[in-house]
Length: 311
Image (cartoon, rainbow, N blue to C red; front, side):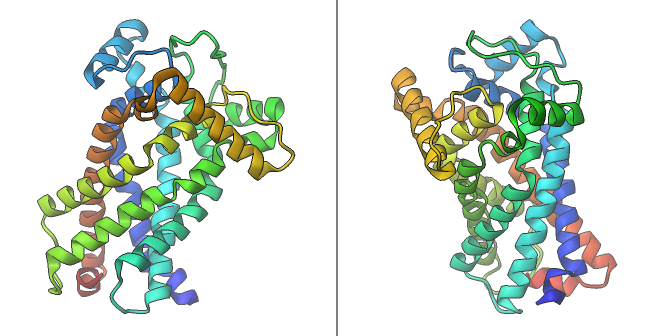
């Protein structure tokens, strides 16, 4: 068990996943900026992604779509390192060399997601606030923030709102472990179908397409909860005062969902989905492509190319 968890193979997968995700997110970062504005700012009209980006650049400057890039990249790097490491470690420990199945991929993906959420949520809370800082919102109720950087944001949040605020949005995030769980289940399943039992390295086009399909399905299914997660991380909401943290989280999620439906209709739950799909599908497809290529090259250098083709 310990050999499966603490292995060079898991480390290679983790580093490859982190490097792939950082590169992919950097390329498509402006699309994520458009998505986040639509989710958080209820008074901003839902327009096409190019229109939103044009509006942001016109009002806030040419570099505005890349505001908050550094904290996002730091969070993403840590998050994907943790997720890929946990996923492949748990997979090796659970399967012990046997062929995986969709059910096991889903369960392992969920378990890795839970660990990832608990470890990295504070980073995502901080990067959400830094990314939105200085933005021009249509909603007048949103309060401006003034953080000088990642460490200052951590300190101010702890001082003003308490340590628990760093885990704002943890409950919907735990529900959202279904997103990477579904994504990896579909990705690994499609990969097995393409190989048809023959150990081989998939082409770049095959990896790109199955990565895009897997992420598109996972994102669409879980998008309303992703919207609530963004609002909670931003911290601009009136939280329920239930004594039980679980009941408080459930009531807050219910109220935010109800308010969004009341103000914008059912489609309000999917506001920004076009921008999110465009960003997340392209990012995930490129990330999986880079991840597979980096891992393949690394295993080849280590003399473990046969192991890589069988996984």
